[in-house]
Length: 48
Image (cartoon, rainbow, N blue to C red; front, side, top):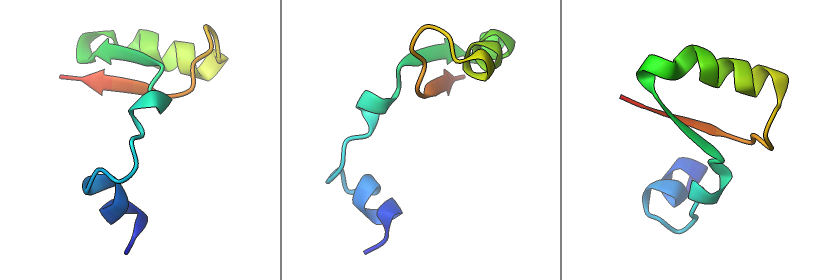
């Protein structure tokens, strides 16, 4: 079983890795945050 299969089946919950969520209109701000590693950022989710 591949890692993608494990994630798809929900055997591993990676949602805790997402520390910040942005809408697509704020993608520049999201990239800036991640690039400069501010505010404890680990992973950013971009939502349409």
